[in-house]
Image (cartoon, rainbow, N blue to C red):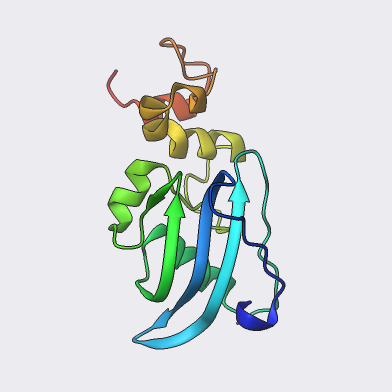
Length: 149
């Protein structure tokens, strides 16, 4: 990742849902990722690929606000979220599903994603799972996402 990787940046006003421009991030002020730029439009799928230790997880952690930016900016849905906290980014719709299996081990992948999307579904009804909408309890994920309701 960084300056040696191939990057694609949308032009201003091109409708990028997520845009990183010149992002540098790392740990304790030491950069791991330097000058990374990326643009992803709504409906697109983007992959960040590289060997172990290349900075893929570090970059994602910076996008969701778990790590601070050392330089650059992150725009989500037209709003600069670079200075937002991790919680505010999450409420705004930026999230991360780790590759570990311990999120909710008894649920399927789809059910884990439904739990993660539940908060977002209140802000954006289009994100709501049909299995958890309208009071349906056809999935265990609905019970976790709406405890006691």
